Amino acid sequence: MPVFLRWMLDLIPTNPMVVRLVHGGSRRTRHLLIRSAYLGVLIIVLLILLLPGQSGAQSFRDLAVRGANAFAWVAYLQLLLICVLSPVFMAGAIAQESSPRTWDILLTTPLSSAQMVLGALFGRLFFILALLLCSLPLFAITQYFGGVPGRSVLMSYAVSGCAAMFVGAVAIALAVNRLAGKRAVFAFYAAVVTYLAVTAAIDAQVRPPSGGVTFMTALNPFLALYSLLSPSSYPRPDDIELASMGAVGRFMLGSPVGAWCLLSGGLSLLMIGVSATTVRQIGANVGGVPWYRSMFGLGAAGASERPIRHVGMNPIAWRESTARQATLGKAVARWGFVLVGVLWAVALVVYYHAGGMAPGVFRSTLLVTVWTELIVIMLVAINTSATSISREREDGTLDILLTTPITPKDYLSGKLRGLVQFLLPLLAVPSATVLLGAAYTLFASAAGAPAPGAPGAVVVSTMIPRSTVSVNAPLMLWEGALTFPIVAVAFVALGVMIGLHWSLKSKGTIASVVWAVGVFGSTAGVCGLLGWQAGSSIPFVGPVLAALNPVTLAFALTHPEEACARSVENDPSFLAARIALAGGAVIAAAVLLALVGALRSSMVRTFDFTTRKLAGNV
Image 1 (cartoon, rainbow, N blue to C red):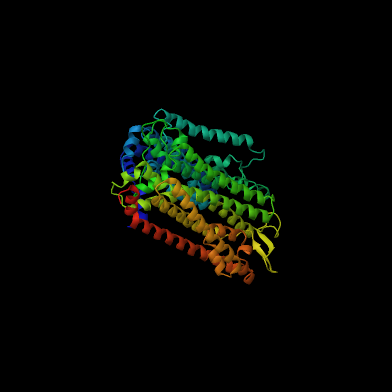
Image 2 (tube, rainbow, N blue to C red):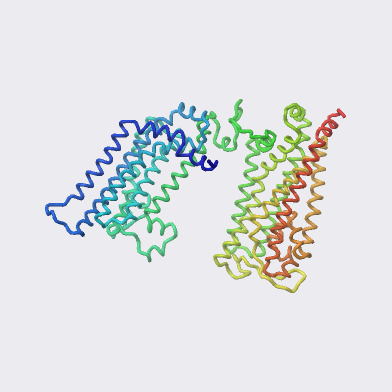
């Protein structure tokens, strides 16, 4: 069986919790009586509504009207019974799974977080969905009399199913997050009834005198079903009124059933996702850890214990990627840089779209932003990697690590991987900046942007430097969203490897930082000047060389008519420059990663000798 298919089956169909709950509940007399009573009530009501009155003979039109009325009443009754029975079935989730002992046992099993949450939900939701399916033959009977569209039958089932799903998700969220216990079962039941009553009362108050759906209709399953089954007495706005509304208003008032299903289903998925994320943190009961410290993976201040951490296959990589943010201040600084950078990029694009700056100013501001972020990230990468090994040598940690089964290859590979993982969130900031600019250029051009040169335009009319050719250059090459992150990650990996090389060869941290900055700065400067000059003066090959450095690549993405001048002069459509930059990015990433691998192999071969020499044993 394929691994993906087995994983999907383990989530719900073959989930041990689902099997246990369904198998155990199916043998309970109480559940059998509930299902029998449910079907019995529906059958009795349907027969009463379908039986003719005093006159035995009826026309086909009368049968169609009776069938439609019977369907409407049974649909309302089914939704009412689902809302009444859902809390009954889901009360076990609140009463049993809220018990700390239950979660303590579950957390010791091989079940994943998603399996525990989905198992607790669908193990009990199965009985509710089974009730819905077993009533389907009753609704099919009404089709023989006419007057009941098949679409209405299916949509009524969708309303009831989403209502049951929403109630179940709320119950599981309360149980997983320990927000309720056995005493809260009645409160949960009362909250469901109160919500339905309050939304119905608000709808009655805000409903216009002529009648019609409101924004409350999409928030109440009974009102949504009422708009579906009684469109004449509870009409929706006409097409003219809907056209004058926003997208949200058109959707909620024009399609209240779809809006209810989307809102309830979306909230259900959100609560399931949050519950799956928090089940282990809350279930583990770390003990007095504030949320702002737990969010960064930290224990309580001054505590002798800390949360369990999964090390992975390489402990050195885990240590490097997590130890750098072991304090709250470092974690806040790291993620603060990410947050500020992303917000600045969003504000820049929004400000330009609103006409706050000219296209040329926007391109220059975007380029300077990316350059500044890259410089900061590279300085952090050089500083952390250049002090990584030398600092461990100074405090004696390296001597302890050399007594473990960790090989030089594992040690250096772990250092490289861990530091790159640590820097990935920082690298996401300039990548996100380029992505936003590229996405704006792509989608705005498809939607019809202003004329070239106007605020908000995605085409800039400009002259090619040292040429008389005028071109309409794109505001930014959208390929940068794919090519820039590839080159940036590979370039940072090379910088980290150079820093590790000098950290291994240098006895002190100051010397290692100075040498690493000097060597990497010289290498990056040479590559940058080569790409800068070649990109503007050599056709096709020049843009390939410009992609060797993320600094020159960012310049080529935002100012292609300058960075790839000769290529654009030969092909004003920018096709040749685009192909050359994309291919150059792939080649640059391969070359940089090859240099990283070669440098790491060289360090592995000389690791023991260099370490002994600096320790004074050679």
